[in-house]
Length: 139
Ligand code: ZN
Image 1 (cartoon, protein in one colour):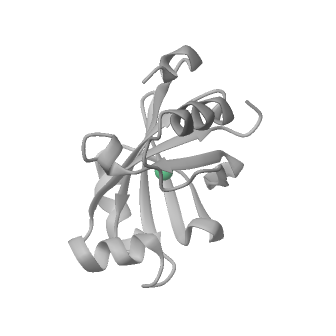
Image 2 (cartoon, protein in one colour):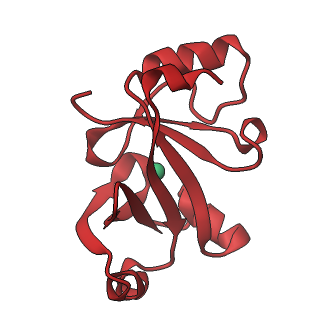
């Protein structure tokens, strides 16, 4: 994968939880700072963003059982949901991935937390991990 030319970085690690209110105290007691809680309707989640050094942990609470994260929890229980690589030109990445025939969840960019442009790559293409690409708003 040549996404390296866009200077990728670990943007966040996302953990699916039943309840932000139940999950947050553990992380806050570890010393992580809660930055914000945001409802992302398009992804069907409530997201708590925690600062951890130069990256973030996001706790994802499903808005309802029929959302992707709700179905994930129903099938597998709470747990590691995806990792996110921050990129500076997601349209270029999506174009390249399409040319290679990479199995995608999103062929085109969607709106994610903080107004970022995001797209998910299918675990079959990544070594078994759901992978999000994210271009922050304003980049
Ligand atoms: Zn994410």
